[in-house]
Length: 313
Image 1 (cartoon, rainbow, N blue to C red):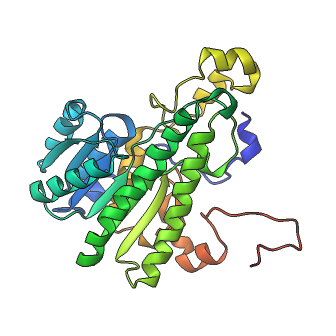
Image 2 (image 1 turned 180 degrees about the vertical axis):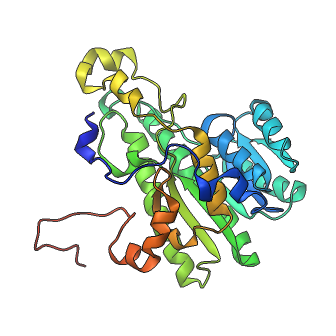
């Protein structure tokens, strides 16, 4: 993969928390809120959970195994907030309903949902089982939609709420060997755009605000995993140059974590419904203004046609 194929930013990217999203700046901004974080065992999910806890939110931590959440729970508990852990497969309708009821009983009404749980397999469709491919769609897209469908009515009834869908730049580009991941993340970004429009129709915008957030280049177990030996043997150079690929991962999980705390606090509402790269300075994006962002279709998925053709109905 040649990074230059997708363009190189001329504005500086952020690779660590900066002033407006720092722990000090956001201290207390989410006091008393109840936040759900899926995929909270480690990596990006754990960082999001701790950043929300550091900003005052009580946190409900979800992952496949409740026991696996002990370390994240301890880190969040150190900030003096309420912390509860739940084992949950986000694709299991019945279990999701059960866990949400338990969260409301244990912590209270849900104010913030961060859909972070995800899976990725580096394998072309021709070398995949359909069930293996579809599992990525289920976890990365069905899971977030299932949680949103259950939580949005509660947010509607209370008149406020924040939903952050952890997306990926993979949902905006065409990269082989990751069809399940790319398409599920693209669907999640599009769903975020569309759901915010639905909030407008229902008179719930901006009280309910949603974001599709790219967490940056974080070297997690999932993102940093290599293609399987049989895929490498068949495709060789068409997989990827691992050294070059790993050099692109420059960002600590806390950058995404603090960006989530910033958005949950309602400080980025002008960016609601958009796809945001957490390496891009929030202050710069906000300074542009929502009217221009929407008018010029910045930070949205789209199609570019030959000059003279438009995406008309």
